[in-house]
Length: 124
Image (cartoon, rainbow, N blue to C red; front, side):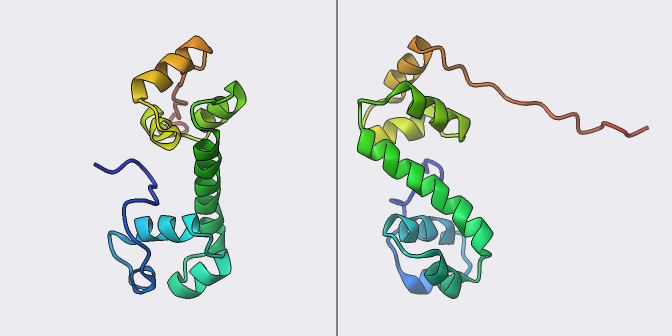
């Protein structure tokens, strides 16, 4: 039962960063959580730094959520939802429940929505 790009799923083992496996994403998250540099991770994985920076942004925001705890300001909750964090991920980060996060979101009128893209536009 994995909760997104979770740095707590796998322990950090550099040899697992170097080998492409189904678990490497979680080891990568653990490395970012432990403040490995983008350069060091690139040296181990050869994953493009552009992608590594995108993943680092997720971990940086997770760190912010964890630091805020249950005193989550409206702006941070809104930004978390805009970045695609689920209520369950937010709850896990702030040591709360998914129901409590949903209630807070509803109380502050933060309503998630899905942008739909016309995948057949221009086709005849």
